[in-house]
Length: 75
Image (cartoon, rainbow, N blue to C red; front, side, top):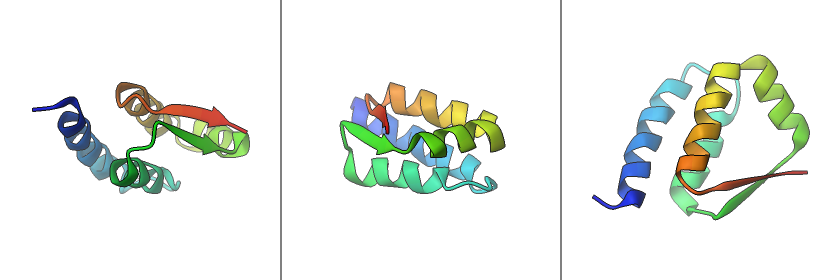
């Protein structure tokens, strides 16, 4: 299994966890799985909101992005 395949499997598991989230983090994970970008540009306000509203989910997504070698660019 390649690292891309293992990231996709972990991503699918993460998406299952995010189905109950009140945020749009699932869309972010879906976009990464679909497009495999080297980085994501995200508004600082979005990150602040995720940290406040869903800290556990944001921590999981942030860790998954790092494990998937996707950098987060906050603007």
